Length: 405
Image 1 (cartoon, rainbow, N blue to C red):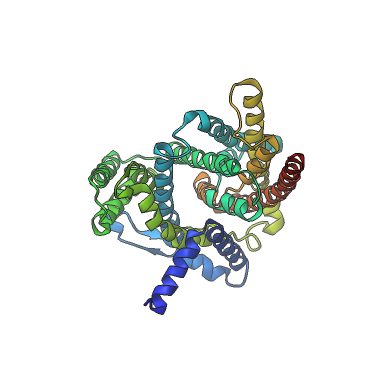
Image 2 (cartoon, rainbow, N blue to C red):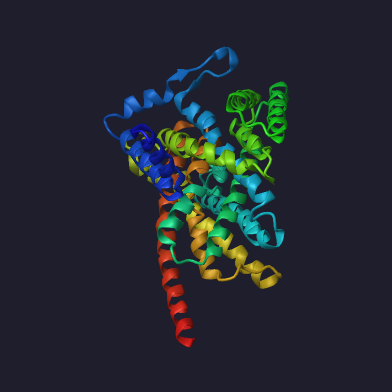
């Protein structure tokens, strides 16, 4: 007989295992942070966010918001690494013929927002070029949550297209973070991190599943990566990518680890990160709300997420299907891709992270994150409307087919 505590635990795990509910939880937390940071509690929120703790001798004396972005978010990136490995070995990315189109669309889907942002800065003459990478990332959890809520009735291949697109987008965003936002490399710490990641991979390849052995190794690899000058979340991705994904009699280790760690990512890492990343103080900041909304950084990111993703993804798919042999999966057409492209403009988690890395000025960081929030919600609303329109078309089409029979 299950105790009330066990039933409560199972209910929480079931809730966090639902992509839609977990995505909505993070949205609610982000909105709460935005409200608090622009209320009489803003000073207390700021003091909590900038409070430091951790051993200085180990290079781990970080502020609370740094622990959220560099520490807890590594759990999320570990799950991303596991999902990437699974997709490359046994999933949608295994067959290059099927994966080629969404993979190329993902690359153009990152180029589009970067160009839209850069064009906007050039037209306004702001000179804030360093924010080009902020609107390039797609948030898998949010995008899938919106698709699950508003996309019931879409062809199954549409979800596969969006997932493949978002997974490759995550991989490219990780490369952007690694190459463009790493500086002052400490090669000793970097090699030490690689050594512990290798040890983690060796143990898991031998079937090691004991958390009391694997977690300390992962934490040491993360700490070394943090001290190396490379963004610490890269350690999480590499640890996930090195876990074996082949199916055995005991199951698929990447799937097993993702199932175990996923609730911690959805229930702890993402909500805490969202709480400290989305707390953008615009009312009390220099220029206030109108100053933030008039900043080319804010407007450029807010515009680049929906428009840049749409132009990059839909435009590339249109061109590739017109002038190459690449074709969309059965049941998916260009208007469906348009809806998926708008959903890809939902760039909350990784875009927020890059927003904090792209600028050094606190005001610009706040404006960049406000732009991410505006662009994300605009993409979600436009994507939901586009999905509803496409579903009505598919329903009419299915009804017409049944009449012909």
